[in-house]
Length: 159
Image (cartoon, rainbow, N blue to C red; front, side):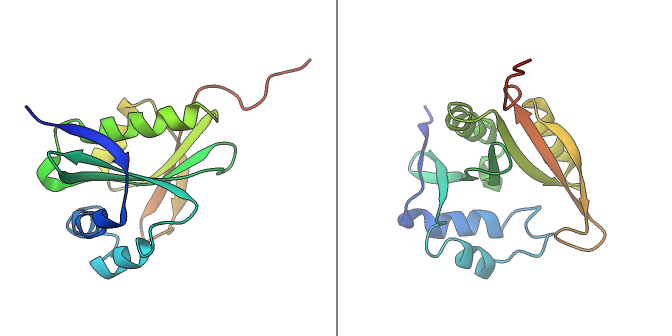
């Protein structure tokens, strides 16, 4: 039986998380290298909630959440190790993050690269709506697409 659980990221997870991200797309295509991830995770991201999914004592995925983005929160990073893909771990991490977000806010935002068809399909299956592209946001000739999942309007109509 596989033992999987989501937990807060610790400094001891840094090396595994950096390796996971440095070895995967779309990050490689976007030009991110291990040194970039080392800077991002040293120290651990401040003012953000960082989670890993642990599979049998090994870090299999990462999620970083920034609170108070627009009228909601922003999923800054979601990644699953290549060796752990296809096991539902990305969905499990996302469900964990959504549980925290929707307990306090109505909206969760994320971005996905326009060329990342697998991620676009994943988010669509999880109920995210594509809001619109941001051309040339990270690399020339490519767009990041803003996504949103909502539990309803931020305010109730008082009229």
